[in-house]
Picture 1 (cartoon, rainbow, N blue to C red):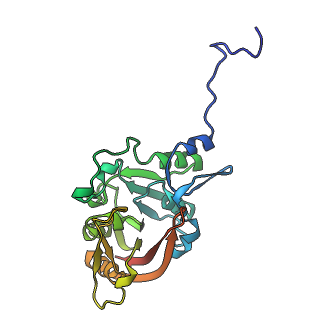
Picture 2: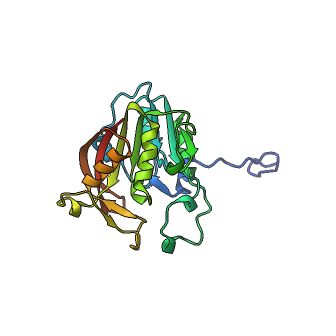
Picture 3: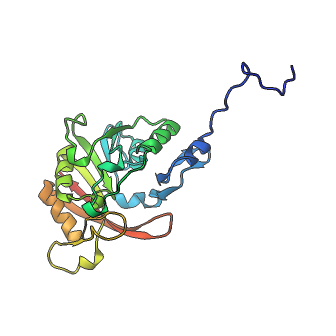
Length: 253
């Protein structure tokens, strides 16, 4: 038998390379998975990590990444020493908030979390993903409260900001820290009272309400946080080139 001929007992399907597996997924986050493999996400948050002002040392912290998608913040907090990292997300886009007139008739069949599962494997991460809507998140469902909770570019797409913030406040330990980074409406900053712009019917990504910075601060306080501070502003740049103004708040219980 010639060595170049593959018979049934000799044939073994060659496993796909990491790069090939990465190429099959639509990524939200840009992630460095090692060995020269880098995902091409909608956003590369890496250059903006400093704007969020996470603790450099998160040793022994229990941490939560809300709306984790591909897991950028879960992996970042784990890298800083957090020993119990959980990411919260939904499994299907059908669970997202949509205005009635804009709700799609069908949704993608690929479950959310596929990118995170591959990235977790490639990075050797111990972070865990829990499928749960923020509105339904409680300490009982997530094994207790957290020392640090991060939520970036998530609340802006929700119908009820205040309910979501109330649930998040219940997930933060007394003395714990919540880091929020969300889009805001700069044109409302000159008004002397908290307000939001209604955008649910625009033909773009779903945003029900676009709050002013003052409004975000007020909602955080109303939701149960005692110490609410704006720590920075920046323009998050998408890989496609457009930018979104973000404000970062630190809030403590």
